[in-house]
Image (cartoon, rainbow, N blue to C red; front, top):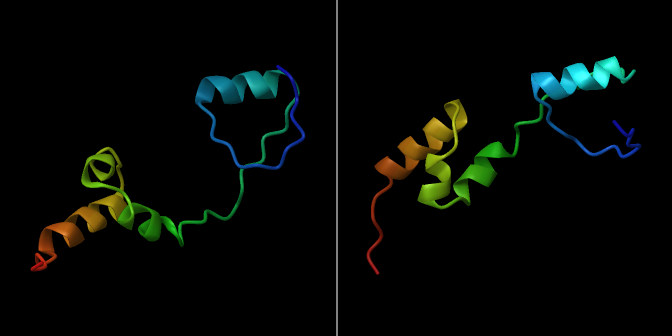
Length: 73
């Protein structure tokens, strides 16, 4: 596994994490999870894309859309 010096966030599976540790990578996950903008991201998704998302915030956005009155136009 090649080391990468970038500081971009990334997500790993258990298998990848085990491989990284085995090659000497020191795994230190962030202590702060940033979800402050997630509602805004979900709000801009189409219904089909939102349907693929899981979690409480996605559930809240689906409920918001169901309860939103139709606009006349």
